[in-house]
Image (tube, one colour):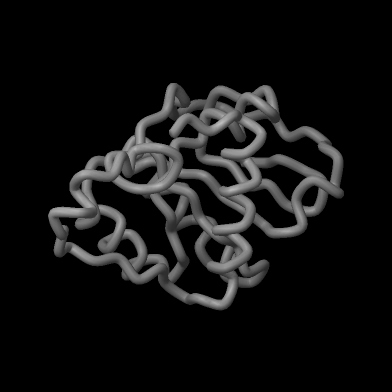
Length: 148
C-alpha cells in the first residue's frame, strides 16, 4: 500500500502524539516472521532512510498551527550525537519527541535513547522536510519556529 505524502505526514503526527507520554520509545530487537514481511522502512521503522543530510539549518518561522508537538530530527552521525548531547536538557524541558533518520538498526536508537533520555522514532523524514523546504538536520520544530 502506497501512502500519499499528506497521509504519511498525518501518520507521523499521530504516532508523535501517542509517544508524548513516553520517556523512551520501547523498541524490540526480536523480529517475528510477520514483522519481517512488512515494509518497515516507510514511514516508521528501520532501516529509516532519508534524502536529508547533516548540515546547517537556518532559523525560520513556520505556521504554528501545523505543529502542536515539539519535534527534533537527528541522524546517527557524530554531528547529530554532539548536537543532541548539547541540547539534551533543553529538549527534555520542552518535552520534545525525536525522529531519527538514516539509521539502520535498533541498537543505535536504543543507545541514543538511553544516553539522552529522550524518545526517538526511526522515521523517513522526507515528506516532513519537503513540506518545510529543509534538506538538513539536526533541527527542532517548536512553537512556530525551526532552529538548530
